[in-house]
Length: 341
Image (cartoon, rainbow, N blue to C red; front, side):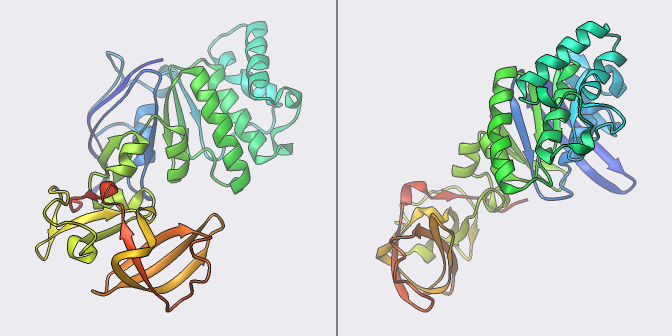
């Protein structure tokens, strides 16, 4: 295991800055997720840590060792990509033993190591199968076993569940999360799927346009987003001025940080923070979506502000588009936010 430290790490491709002065620490044994929209720099950051890209500026350290210009084959990093990149001309066991073989591990030892990992990942019975005969979930496990077989200091996962169906993702998310906890290996998990990151990672770094906007625990990022970008990217939120919530929020005691628009503070209010059925906020239902456990309402307030509101499916019974409703808001959950720089 190792602590990874990035200091003002920058990567430019011609005139494009993909990673812009990123400073970040991944603690020893931690699972850190990097999330953000396409093109934000998250995969480039992973490739810099792995050694597949060379930094334009800044440094990369594993513990106290400068790895900025060390070639990837000398970094002892395990990698799992979204395409798994398995060798179809090898069996599952041969795929897993390939890395240790390249590192000079003796045949018996690498076979035993492979068997242990296949057992751990519950795919021992697939050892003699060809990768192309496996399901997506099985291939993902083989890719992970191969990455772990070299006993890496660091594990890098780049969108490893892309292309899997929703039910399989949920199952593997739980299994992989439990496995990473058991292995206690320093892990960087790059994904566009915020739900995966929230469920599996100790901390999350939210990237935007090459910058890190916020690094914190999943709960802190959701409950206390640093700015409008984070609030809008992680989950669903409403960015509103205090006057939109007139009567429900005391402007004298409302959060005093955050930006203002037309003289009013900007507040982040999650859809779950509203209480439908009574209260000082009057609105009209513009749209309604049944989501199973919840019903999502799109409502318009008297000042023309559109809000997304979640309520229990039983509380929404009888509601329809065009209805006038009243709402209150859990003021203790409201968080003031700054505009994204």
